[in-house]
Image 1 (tube, rainbow over the protein chains, first blue to last red):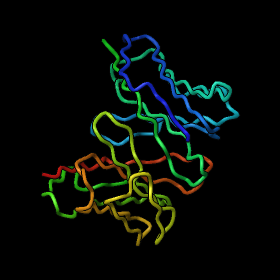
Image 2: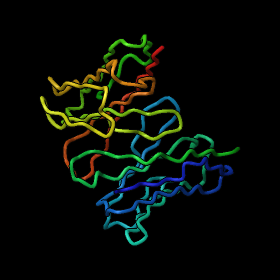
Image 3: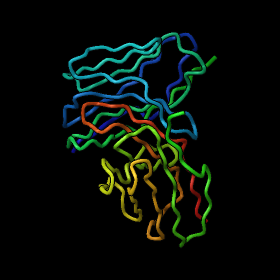
Image 4: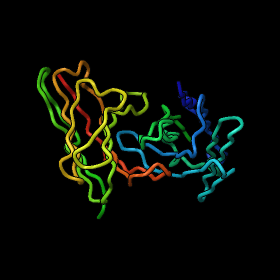
Length: 113
Length: 114
């Protein structure tokens, strides 16, 4: 069956450094991947979408890559700030093309001042 | 302001009672979703609807029911058959289509059953 794996352990990064989060998927080939940010007690907020024919997408300090050979997407935050501390969720489409959105468990990111 | 609204933010119920969580959107979105999130866990899909008067079960539909009588509204009822209903419930909406459209989420309802 299809699987989405994110490092569910918390990631601690020093302020100013680049944070890199990983999303691995197995047993299917999504046409795109979305990344969301979730703060405690709140709903997720959309950040970026990258399609299978795009190697990289940027938005301000955020960068997402999509490697269909490795079946992996990397999410980078450059010049990280304490305000970037949150849980980041990877969301590929459903493999059944039925308009469901499925989410990885997310990675908790802590930016240390 | 366009958005998606869940109410209430906090809800307490006694065991054995049904409870209905509200979700309303004014974004003119066709598709709406209900997710459940437990502490330290990801989002699990309960039900989704792509069009009025139609909805499909997600991965954990047992003990839940929904209706979609209006495009703007997708209420979720947590029934007494749900074994462990205490959780954080999130509603989302998006434009219909499998080409990749972002989902907008409500602020969530934290349900506690005692």
